[in-house]
Image (cartoon, rainbow, N blue to C red; front, side, top):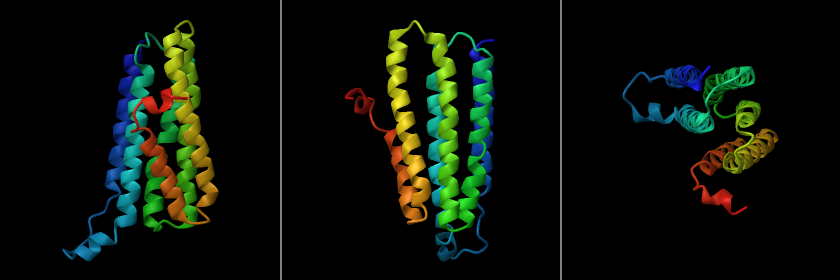
Length: 189
C-alpha cells in the first residue's frame, strides 16, 4: 500500500483531535470581560496543545515524505501514535478544568511524554524503508535527537509539576519552541 491512504487517515484523525479540543472551549454566559479572564487556564492549555498537535502533524508529514510504500510495522506504529495523540484533548480539558493543579499538570506532561514515546517506533519503522539512504539517516538522526530531547524534558516535567505546575508548562512550551528553531540548531552537534 502506498503512504497516501495512511497520510489521509492520519490527517483526518488529527483534524478530529483539533476539533475535539476546540469544542472544549466553552463560551462564558455574559459580556463581562472578567468572565473571559477566568478561562485563561483552559485557553492556555488549548493553545499549547494546538501547537503540540500541529508540530506532530508537520513531523508526521516530514517523516512520510519520500516513502514509496508502507508495511504492517508502519501501519501499526502509526495507529499506536494516533491513539496516543488522541489522548491530548482529554489531558488538555482536564488541565484547563482543574486550574493547572499539580496532578492535572503532571498528567498533561505524562500524556505528552506518551505521545513522544509513540513517535519513536513509527520513526524507526519508516527509517527501515530507507536503510540504504545515508542522507535520510543523517536527517533522521537530527529528528531523533529532538525527539529524545523532548522525551527527557517531558519526563523531567512530570515530577516538577509537584514543585510548581508553571515549571511543567514552561517545559512543555520549551519543547514546542524547540521545533520552531531553525534546522541549523541541530546541525551544529
